[in-house]
Image (cartoon, helix red, strand yellow):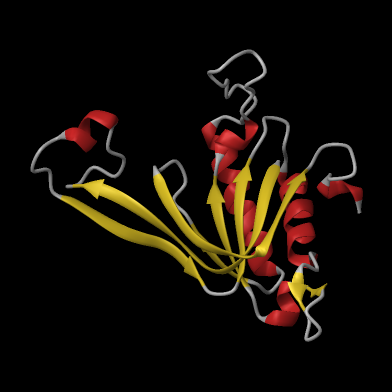
Length: 176
C-alpha cells in the first residue's frame, strides 16, 4: 500500500455525475446541455487527507498496519508549534481517497503503467478496511468514492505532506 498523508485545515471530495450515470466518460463531459450535478462524498475539518493506493500483494494485515501508523502519526502542532501531537490528541478527522495512480510506473517513458496497482475488487476491499480500521481506532473518517473521477479540494496545513509505503525501507509503514 502507498499513502500520501497531507495535514489539512479542511478537505472535501466532489464527484460530478450526469443524469443517472455515476461515472461519465470523457465524451460525456463534452456533451452540450448535459444535466450535471456535483455532490460532496466526504468532507472534514482539521486532520489528514490520505490518498491511498493498494498493491496486488497487500492484505488485511497491511491495511491495518498502515491505518495504525497513520492514526499515530505525530505531525499535528502542539501549543509550542512543534509537530508533536497525533489526531486523537487534536480531535482531527481523516478523509480517505482511493488513488490507484500512486502505483504508477513511468520509468519506461512518458505514459505511465498502472500494472502495479491491485485489481479493483481487492483495492476496494482494502480501501474500505483501511478506513474501517481508522474508525475502530476512534477517528472520524470520511471517504471519497472508490473508482470515481473525483475533485479533491483541500487546504494543506504547513504544508505537511508525508509518503508512507507498506514495503521495505525507512518510509515503510511496517517499520515500526
